[in-house]
Structure formats: structure tokens, C-alpha cells
Length: 230
Image (cartoon, rainbow, N blue to C red; front, side, top):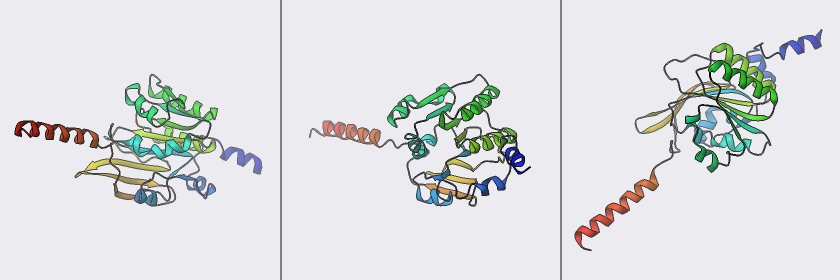
């Protein structure tokens, strides 16, 4: 009887709520390298299960998550991108040595994307899946959360739809945004910790244009020198 119950609780369609989280204590976490943010995350993003980041496209979300990607490079497994082709920068992938370890899948619709995501998790060929299609609903998120925990896979949902907000059964639910010349993250949900608003991000997100600014200053200085005859 005990064995039958254990098998039933492992079924990916059954969500165990807080009991599932407690069973995995302590939780292995992947730090993001931002002191205040990692402290609010109780050490970082859990290395298995579903986490969501909400943001506008081009907000430097992949740069923020770079330490998570770097941690996957030595696993011997692939990074799966269930993404739109136009949203992935191959130069960024190559720069961070992710190009050869990445597989890009672009299903025709959300239903096919969810099916592909589940199959990738079950295959155990990947340690990280980045999913960005239409916003996940609670049912899909619950299924992916349980499945990714069961197979010890990190699933990152990057949600570019900021028009609606639905609470989901995820490990981390956060929002990246720009306000008053500063980038912030608000944590709506963190397993093992408390929500926290307006955490300032010290790193320049997206990457700064210091090189361009320096080049423009040098050009301006050269023009002034020419005009003054110096």
C-alpha cells in the first residue's frame, strides 16, 4: 500500500503544494551574482523545477541569468531553447560559450511547445530549458513544475506578456523592469523565502554602451581640435 501511494505522489499530474517543497529541503540553488537579489532568493534560483521571470524583450534578462547558464556548461547536457527565432541572439550565445551546447526548438503553436517541453524534460538529455511562448496557465505550470522537479531539470519561463498577471505554482516568480534611471526586480514568489519589491540591480542591464560613448567623445574631441587648429 505504501509503495502504491509513493508511486501515485510521483505522478506529474498531481501537485503536492508545500509538501513537495519541504521534501526537497535543503534546496540546491544557483546564485545570480547580485548580492541583494541572491539574499532575497535565499541563495539563488532552485536548480530544479520551474521559475518565471516577467519582463519586456531586450531588458537584459539573459544577461541577468548568465550565471545560471554558466552553471549548466559542465553538466554534459544540453540547453533547450523553446523560443522564437528572432528573440535569440547567436552572437550572445557564442560569446558565453553556449552555442554548441544549445538546441533551438520553435514549434508552430503553444500546444506543440508545451508538448515539446514535456518531452525534453522526460528525455533527461537537457539540464536547462528556456521556455518563452504565450503565458503559461496554472494547469500547464503545475504540470511542468512537478515534471521538472521529478527529472531534476531547471525550467525557466521567460514571459514577455506584461498585460496580465496570474499567480503560478513556481519556485520563483519575479519581474524585471526599469524605473527612474534604475533597473529593479520584484520577487512575487520565492520558495523558502518571502516576496520582496524593488530590489535594485547594480549591474548595467542591458549591457552598457560605454564603448560607444567613449568613441563618440573621442570623435567630438578630434572635431574640436580640428576647429581650434590645435
